[in-house]
Image (cartoon, rainbow, N blue to C red):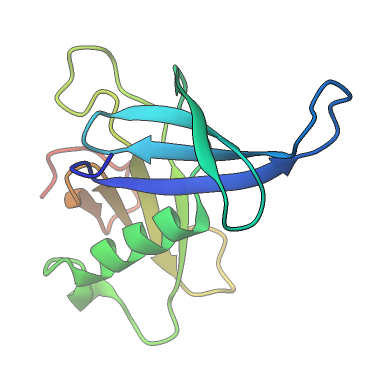
Amino acid sequence: MADKRYRVLGASQLVDDKERETPTSLLLLYSYTDEQTYRVWLAGEGGDLRVQDVEEVDQQPPASDEELDHAIEIARGAGDVAPHLADGYEATALLTSSVEPGDQHYGHRRVVVGFGPPEERLPRVRVLVDLATEEVLAVDTSSDRLQEGQR
């Protein structure tokens, strides 16, 4: 994983299995380079952890807080978004459903970031961010649905 761009999405220690003699830790990683989710099983305790197994997982796990924060940062930094952001606008972010196989963004982790006043239910500005390429794919400042290619 040394030459890949990835993020740790979660970690847990598994100690409840009667068959397990030593605690096992589990890391959930997403590689943006491979567009692949991995479960990394670690054996040992404290500073003496070692990789026991790496398993490819065929699913898109929920976005981590760090991923959502990064998507918001990318969206805020887009030149065509900043002029539409008023003081006091808050950001929300949701991982979107994947696109169809064959689409250029298939398998990428894409996040819709919404900006608006906290007292309003719907965002006034919506931005589609691709975390794999770290790019803004679309910006919507209208009441219409967010469509790719509107930039």
